[in-house]
Image (spheres, protein in one colour):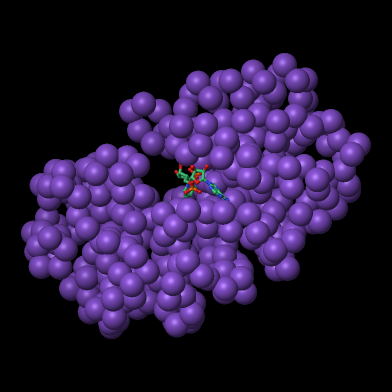
Amino acid sequence: MVKIDIKTPSKSYSVYIGNNVLDSLSLHLQSTHYTKLLIITDETVGKLHLEELQSAIPQSYETFIYVVPPGEKAKQFAIYEASLSFALEKGLDRKSCIIALGGGSVGDLAGFVAATYMRGIPFIQVPTTILAHDSAVGGKTGINHPLGKNMIGSFHQPEAVIYQTEFLKTLPQSEIRSGFAEAVKHALIADVSLLEFLMSNVIDLHSIKDEHLIYFLQRGIEIKANIVSQDERESGIRAFLNFGHTLGHVIESSAGYGKVSHGEAVMTGMIYALYLSKEVLDLEFNITEFELWIKKLGYSLEIPDGFDFNNAFTSMTRDKKSYSNQPRFVLLDKVGEPLVKELDKELLEKVYTTFLS
Ligand code: NAD
Ligand code: ZN
């Protein structure tokens, strides 16, 4: 088992990662006397892993379960409202605790319910996807608005993160690929040796060894936590976590949400950001070798049919992370040394046409 202690200006908490870390949940619940527990999970994860989670909860606890639809559907206003109603009906109070069992969607929803129920109650993350190594730490919680993804939300840190890696064994390949892209992102922006580790040890996403999985989840969380602890509210270096996301978001939306996974789109966005870094900052990095590895892992790196560079440029400029009328990109001076730059259309189009289209 790996334990990471995370300190943020607003809270300190621990992340436990391993094959059997539900014991740590039991211990936490025994030592902290919450009045009631509410487990929020989705239909898919609930069927697979709820029973095992429940077996780790001390008998003395009155526990309620609320099941939401899987994926982004969990992050709708109506589901948020229904979750709050359920919590009120069951009499949760300010000393009750919410447990999020699921991927980033459940974590974001349950975290936001916890952040806003009675002005904020404790919550525990039990992430079940690889991507959730990214979403379970950092304290961002929220739901979607019909006019934009993650537009309604709050910062609310968990009491603990219990990362039972056994739960990841049931993930479909597409979800593994989506989540692994964020692990690669963490390596590219912060840790060249992690990148080398990944490139030499992860050659097939069907068969990642437990010890390798635990290691890169741990490093990914440490990297994210380190950035977030310096910039909890995203006024500065937290922007580095958007590496690959400027183009990635546009690919995701021009394909139609759900058609290309977030991670697949971000992977293509990262390749673009690498070529931009080579062009603008003379980044010394073998992008061809990197691309070859990524393709062997099953990433198609395709640009979707509905994609148009001019429209993409407009969307990238409008992205909430842009301050002027030029899109802001996270680039790499070296692997592990990111910086933010605003880039003009001509350069962006040239690199896009040369390397991606
Ligand atoms: P998810 O929660 O949407 O889950 C994806 C699918 O996998 C769902 O159908 C789910 O039921 C299924 N699933 C989850 N765990 C499983 C398991 N162990 N076995 C089998 N199936 C399983 O996906 P995600 O990719 O983890 O999260 C995506 C969400 O995370 C997005 O809404 C994104 O906005 C959010 N996010 C938040 C942050 C943050 O900082 N808060 C960071 C990154 C992403
Ligand atoms: Zn992402």
